[in-house]
Image (cartoon, rainbow, N blue to C red; front, side):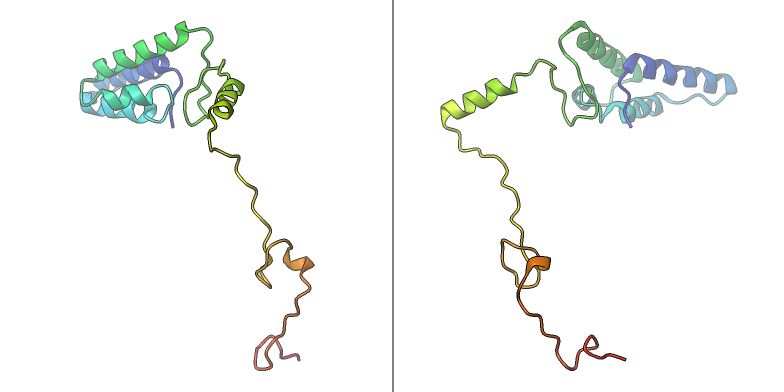
Length: 147
């Protein structure tokens, strides 16, 4: 699980810290740090920040994540879809990238579709339904016995 809004997540963790300290069992700084790290480590925007800030205090990690979120929000043309595997800008010119690859003579090709293979005769080009190979059932097979 990850949170896209670091400000809101940090406020929620601090509210839980306040509640537990009022109950007499406050969380340690390590527990708060681990909770914040767990909730943001898989997010495409925050994972680099969380991975580079090692074993510091909760406040230091919270400050780093807040600064990262502010930096992301200040760039108007940059959108991040958290469902994507990596963060990308909204204005990426993939067509330009394709043109430059073809100009440079790149050997990359599109993924080839899988060839259909028959499981009966093990040949390519047709499926088992279309296979004209005859299948013989041995006489001593349980499939050959009829009641």
